[in-house]
Image (cartoon, rainbow, N blue to C red):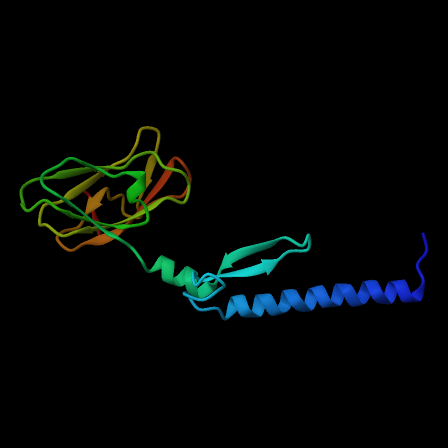
Length: 170
């Protein structure tokens, strides 16, 4: 199959026009506000090489979404069981006593799942991992270090769990 110079020039001009439009879309997306975009939801249209247009959250929207943690309060002696619906949020746990040890049971979860925890009461918390999972902490800890301690529990894989933050062996 052969092409004339005019056909090649036309195809090249079409390609460059599509690329220019994509670059313009990417620049608009990159600088887009968290409440910008065509629907005011921080999502901006990007057209791929197949001509399909998808709405993609701008970097500002991603930062905004990440900053919107909900506070979920758990109180009492427990035990408490975290849920997958609570993942990605700040879990405030208050036992209200310095003598009770409260167990916080962590469910099986997919890779990438994380809970952010805060001990607001004076009673220590011990995190219990799901069967078949291994808890890792640099100091071998399995609980909280004391009132106002904070940190996270994250699943690196479905069976590898890290406890990070202000921790202690309890």
